[in-house]
Image (cartoon, rainbow, N blue to C red; front, side, top):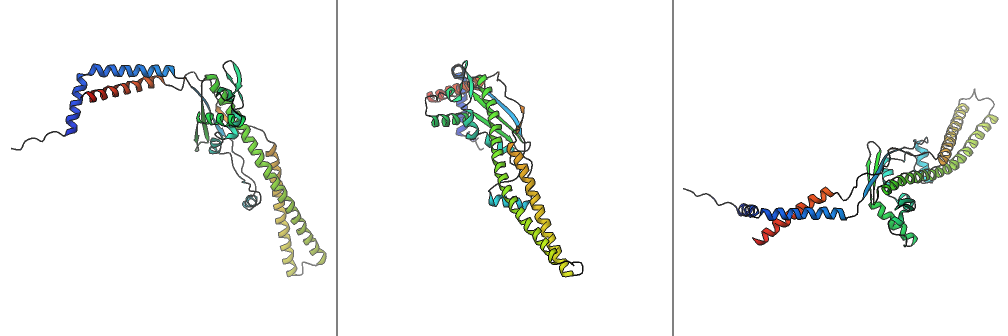
Length: 310
């Protein structure tokens, strides 16, 4: 008759640990309660932070009316990218740049009954100018979360700050600054495109004048075109050259006018459908989570003591 195999060592150790835990359950409960109390006190003593944010959808630029050939010329001569630029990902990345955050940290926000720059809120008023703005923008960037939904084009961001009114004011300032920065970028791009199309339109006008002079000279030299097939072929070729030059010139002039309108346009480029609000609850520290984490740590310390005394 074959005897039963002994249980594995890990099973024996776990069984013995369970037995000792039951034996010292009062000690484990005490450790857990002390840990939970310590977590709750820590959560109360830590500074509170509040979160405010917004959700918006970007307005896409209308596609350029220039054809593929002209767009290629624009990229070759002026390094100008023609086409829709204001995508959701573009705005999500723009939110974190110094072009936006560098202006936000210089704006006045409510803090302790007065209106002061954000650099003062961060305790950087005594720093040199360049270092002050750089450090404040870095702190603001770390306090910001951005979520981009590429499929719907919706961008959400949130800001954590030490006071509810401060968080709402920073989020509102971020929206205003984001729109201003994008308008400035759009105007700069439109100015570059207008300059490029102006130069190309002038060149196209000279080519159109040259083609028209060539056709006029042909008619002056050849009075009877209808009776000569070879002259008719030359006439058709010259007319096609004039027609093509006219189309290019007209298209470039239209594009120049569109760029000129875009250059002076100052309408908002984002549609906010979830504006910043004053938060009514803190975002950190979460007291319930702190108490639960303290209980778990206390229980773990209780088991550690049982293992040491084993």
